[in-house]
Image 1 (tube, rainbow, N blue to C red):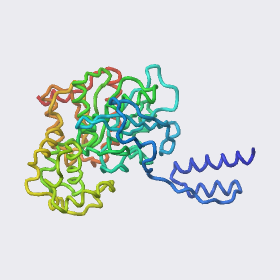
Image 2: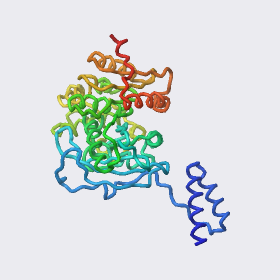
Image 3: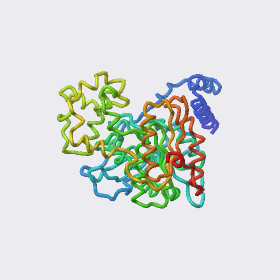
Image 4: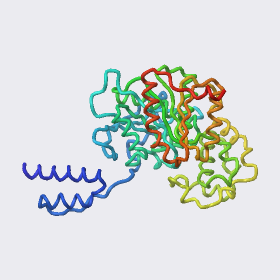
Length: 403
């Protein structure tokens, strides 16, 4: 029994030291204190591979959007000990109306829930690739684990989708805001079946491409009339995809190839060879093996597309469906952006479009802030806005000054 207790104490000390970023020093200290024989330290796993949990039959057995396929608790994420993680796999719907399997994760406090259940934040992540391995649930830190864990410790549950084709089998729609928004919305239904402790009321929140999805959630919910959806938070620069790709000189080769991949996912009849050069077509296959590909694709984007590529009918349709603020929404929106963000001007224009539709928008600007730091610098504003909508208080509306 004494030996077992000693081993237990060693494990506890190692865990504590890991959280402090002092693994090697503390492990040596713990071993020396116990007089134990040194053993090889386990390799720290920073990412996982898609395992059986993510696999589905081909063809996928039919299911309604939001229907849960399976769920399992997962304790290998780099999260505080009081945060419980449950992986989910569920049915969603592609842009073409096809049934697709999507993976995600539910994070919640590991304690008794309030009577009404944990209030829910549906997290929409930014993009770092279209390969299966780019799924946030395959990253040890969930790519935004510190922020998400903070909200869990404040008493919220997080439902974070991977989006179709990331983690699960199939194709990802890249920056298609409506496809990603559907995956966000249906993740809520599935999560409640996996974790009954979740409450009914929820908000959507996302960063960069995830911010676009959060706006799309608001637009879709305006027609769905879900009384439990309370609004969306968009962090980072909003953008019209057409403006972003209006000149290949402004974008990376990886971004342009991801766009072509996304267009083909949304419109299966689209032929990438209609817009890509031979060099671009040959590079497209590399997307399935790359995450954060900006660093690994050194080619000039302009060399990968044919003249007038942007006039392709499928590309134009893709641009049209990714123009946020094009339809009225009935729930409040919080937009958070640095005024030195490259997309700040576009963000301001989209906010003006939302305001012109009679929407309620709080637009918080962070002068001179590094765009990457906005997610952290705006935490207080995020919390105040969410506390307000969950308490049924009317949020601040900057649209009155727009008129």
